[in-house]
Structures are given as C-alpha cells and as structure tokens.
Length: 232
Image (cartoon, rainbow, N blue to C red):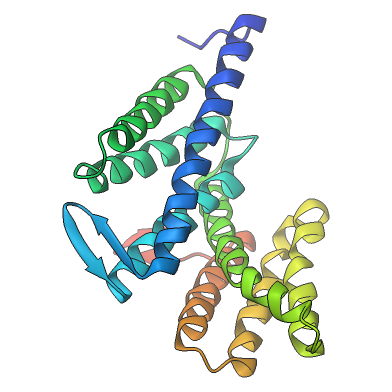
C-alpha cells in the first residue's frame, strides 16, 4: 500500500523532518565539540585522544553526509541513514545523563516513523552509491573547511589556502549544474591539501577524502566495481 500524499500527510512528514533535523543538529554539536575536547565517554567506556577523535568525527561526518546525500529528494534513504545514526548514538549514550539517551531514542523512533510514511523514489543503486560517497567527500571537506577559513581570513593572508578553499567550494555549483563532475574539485583539493600542512590529522582526513572522492567519481561515470564478488 502506498503512503498517502495528501496535505495532512505532507504536513506530518514536514513536522517530523523539522524535529529530526533539530535533534540531529544537537548531536552533531556534541560530536563536533567532543572531537575537539580529545576525551569522550561512549558505550560506557572513556576514550582518550585518537579513539575519541575517530568515533566523534566519524559520527559527525556520517550525520553531515546523510543530509548532503539524501536531503531533500530522497526522504526514505535519509530516514534510513538517520535511523542508523540515532541507533549508534543511543548505544553510545546509554551511560550519559538520562535525557541524552532519551533524546536519541526519540530521534530513532521518529526516524522510523518518518521512514514508514515516506514515499519511495526510483533511484538506481549506482546513484545511491555516488550520492553517498559524494556526501562523505563533501563532509570531510567541511571538517577541513573550518581550519581553512580561519587561516584564510587571518591577518597574515595565505593565498594558497584561500585558492584551495575556493577550489573545493567549486564542487557546489558543479553539483547543481554538472553533478557527475562535482567530485573533481574535491579530489584535487584533497590531493593538494597535505602539501601546505604539517598536521598528521589533516593528512589523514585528506587521504579519506581522496578515497571517497575517487569512489564518487567511479560511480558517477558508471565504472563497474566489484566488492566481495558483487558488481556495483
């Protein structure tokens, strides 16, 4: 049975989406500031430095990528991603203050309800993969963007970092006009970014960005990729 598409149904879905995005924004701030702090308490275990950074930044990037990849055209895929996001967050926050896991459970329940109410949109598996990997690549770029903007607007202007920043941002108009080519500026950005940085963290992010950008390009141009015997 297809979900109703009347005015009331759209209103309910719109309200659910607004609440879910607000809850998502709250947890994204927690993950972002948790990565800056260097110490976090998740899954009832205290993590320090690198493990905390990997988990916090990983969840932050996954949340951003879900919105970038699926919003607003593919509501069902967005709700599936948010369901996974809130499931992990719920398990990670079980030992926190009680209202935090309660809020993550509310996000999980609402995302499952919204998934049920969302209509399915026709999209090929290759398009799903391309959108997801582009979302990951752009999310990694946004993480590095914070440091780039600070360095670019500093009194001691660094023209190289500003040029790289503009190169990465070029993916936005390309995504609108020529979606298939939009990962190219991000790929070039991630290749060149470590050359002007001595940070191992930046190099790690750039390496991840290169990999997901290459995958996004491969799926965008119809390259056949075999993963564990399954052709995509």
